[in-house]
Length: 460
Ligand code: ARG
Image (cartoon, rainbow, N blue to C red):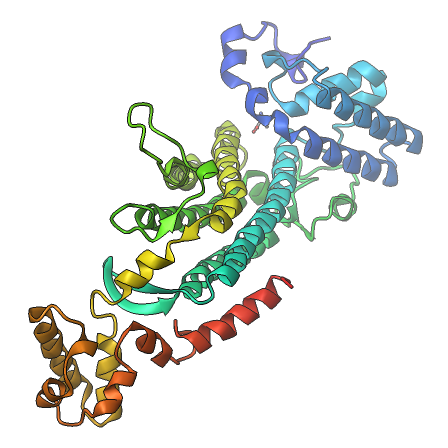
């Protein structure tokens, strides 16, 4: 009998170059465990509907357990001629248990099988990513304890804008990663649908029970259209999109910390264990890890266009193009996982250089907006206040002093509603204290959010 599962109608042997060209075992071997679980559920269902005897199902299930062990120990040699992980497992099953093994693929095709495997794999990857993202959020909250008293300049256009509590920065990242987690959780609903039993494209004439396999595999629902689900890769593109957004968040954070770590900023010191040196300049301590997190985000994001281009223009239903989906998905998943695994140690290990920060906080008129709001509270129209403060900034700049250093006389000359209480809003400390709206970077608002995050992340 032919070595190929589909060899019956072929007279000629497949060209070895074709086998090398068409194989996917070199990248789908990691689906072995989910493939075996899918096959075991399928065998149990076949026994339930009478397409296998109970004894046959038990034999298949236990042989598959043994094959899982063999693969885990590297005892199953991978061969291009067997194409993919599905055929490797099935042919090994037949080697081990003979004719009973030849019944496993009843009412199933590799088209619904590979989709089932991928859905199980992605479902677990999403659960793992949720854990990793939670760890990153926790790291930001943990470092919030240390930095509770620190004020940082907030920037727009990378120009100093208004002061905020440092913790406001850390919680900004918690918010972003929370949206990432929520998006993944929502995407998981569309991942967790069972394609099994759709067979090649049309379903089957055999009396299968798709609800049963879905239940055994923990799927929430059963896909209702065999043509659709056997070719659907929306769930991968959606997952990749979620990953791409996480990567965008990581990359932005990495860039910010790379800047803060420069001599020019001097706000942050990265831990030695998470930086590297230069082979020629002995003094260098480079933020290569952050640069690679920023750089590797390209590989994660690239999966989205890669998958979209892959499915664009494919007619229903399965086409072999779809085999390429795993390359994009796994590259994105592996890369993002590696970045997220490294992050918490960097987040908690870095230190804010408080002296440098304090010494520089009074540069750049971070209290100008609060001064304008002080005028508004005294009845000055916003646009007028804006202009008045603009003039005072120019005046202070010409004298190389802070707004808080301007004498009351000069302030009152600019606007007569100003009295000595103005000095309680001038200066960075006062300016950050004055911020009080919900969600602001002011002390009270941040303290409130910090407590909420501790609770949400179940930190003591
Ligand atoms: N190796 C294939 C893949 O990963 C499995 C499905 C093959 N199906 C087929 N009809 N040739 O997509």
